[in-house]
Length: 126
Image 1 (cartoon, helix red, strand yellow):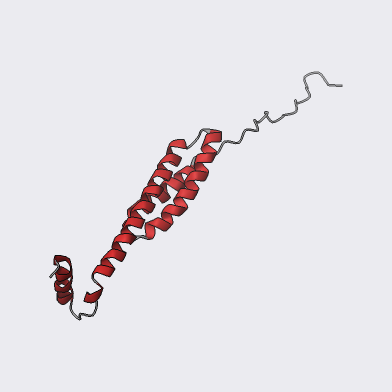
Image 2 (tube, rainbow, N blue to C red):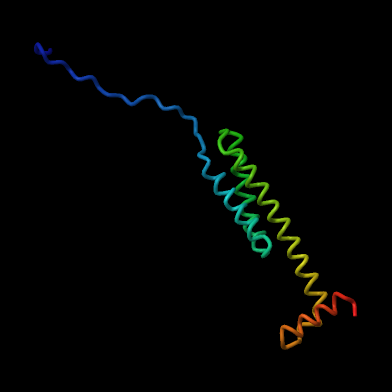
């Protein structure tokens, strides 16, 4: 029973929330940053390890982006840059091993100038 001029307040209910989970593009962004850092550091061979991590994170982000539709471009960029960083790191490692093998007789010299002359002789074939 209400007195005149007084009303019973309505109960507040929360609006219905959809249960669809939307992945934020954060994982794709992290993967893209890892891929970029890996590509920059790949000449020092360290980028290959970072690239492997970026590749795994990028693949996970790509799989999530297929479901949610968010962050697909960043995920593809991350996978591409990470793969490129791994390839460059492998090529740099192969080159370093080849160079070390080719110039192994020059490692006994005491001065850098002597080392340069020895390396020059190794590559000129004399």
